[in-house]
Amino acid sequence: MYSKFENFMKKYLAPLADKMDKEVHLSAVKKAMVAMTPLLIIGSFCLIPEAIPNMIGEKHVISQWILANLDIIYIPYNVGMALMSVYVTVIIAYQLATSYKLDIPGCVTMGLVSFLMLVVEFTEDGGISKTYLGPKGLFCAMFAGFIAVELFRWCKKKNFTIKMPDTVPDFVSRSFEMIPISVIIIGFFLIVRIVCVNVLNTMPPLIFTAIFAPLVGSMDNPIAYTFLKMLQALIFFFGIHPSVLSPITSPISTQFLAENIAAVQAGHVATHFYAPGPESAFGNFTGSGVTIGCVFWCLMSKNKALKQVGRLSFIPALFEINEPILFGAPIVLNPMFFIPFVICGGIIGSLGGWAMYLGIMKCSTFTPPYVGVFLEGFLTNMDPMSIVVNAVQLILSILIWYPFVKSYEKTYGNKEEETNAISAEDAAILDDLDLDF
Image 1 (cartoon, one colour):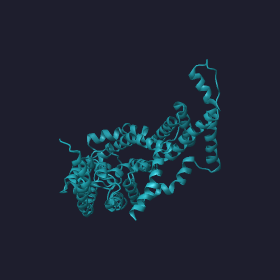
Image 2 (image 1 turned 45 degrees about the vertical axis):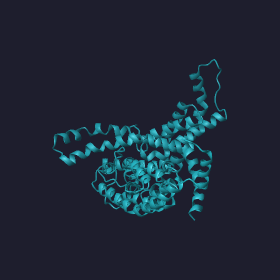
Image 3 (image 1 turned 135 degrees about the vertical axis):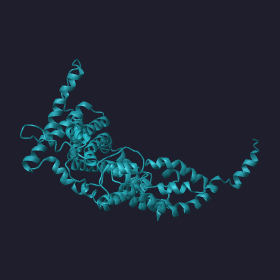
């Protein structure tokens, strides 16, 4: 039964995951989301000073200085996370232009102009509203980046450009080449804007919000989140890194984090549990599938090889890197570890989401760097309950992995003997050679 399932995964899932990982559009989204990490961290940091007056009192001199300078403190957030969709558009256009070997400045310019045409709203005093320049415009940013570059590519392929003589300087020639391309791209997005606003009576970003509402909403459902953690462990079990899913999941978690920060900034409570910080600190506690239990029992093993694997895996596991144990034990493609890694690991990894959903633990407003287990979880929400949740995950992992590692330890010793043993036939050949070392 297992062999049939393994063959099915190798035949269908592995090629699909490989194509997803190499697909230029998904790759561009993944790289754009990774590039947003500094903005998320800096934006989260801006919330910390505002919380200080609540801890030490508003009459304290430090509190008074903070309250008087909140506008300055929030500048990094207002020019960073609050304009996130602008940067995502630029990075996606850049990555696609690089993949297609197109003119990068031209593609980036067209992508950015296209995005702004879809999302910009003007205030009564002639200013520009930031409503859709931040997380609310992420899906619109992807659409604009994709379509603008694809139209650019199509125009170049069909030679819809103005050719200038070779004697004309290159920068002048490129400017004239861009004229027909710009007219086509801007014209397309202008039509989209007119149809959405004048015919459908709504802004384009709201159209995308309605389309992707089921997908986005499902990530605020702990049952769906538990399934996601099992799916990530499942594909990793077959040697496929879960990052292949990040082009789908990262925009949602990033949007939720930004909405949490905006809610806290406005004096409300953060409500989204699916965010980058908790996903790392709780969802991937000691690594995908919560494998610290396997590391622990390998360390305790009487088998020298398994003990060595445990030693090599322990420190990385404290920083949520579990490739040493995944490929060293190994867990990957090992039928004996399917249940603790995929099923139990997915459930344990979702405990943080359940705790936040049930109100046991605060939702996240911060995405800390990799600072190690327990501390990282605490930094995501500054809630002591995060340490309790991590402790429960640790204990459950150790308890669940025990029988599986002990059973594997017995078979592992037999395999080691079989691997190291020399058959009688091979021994006879060596004797015939009469090698004298």
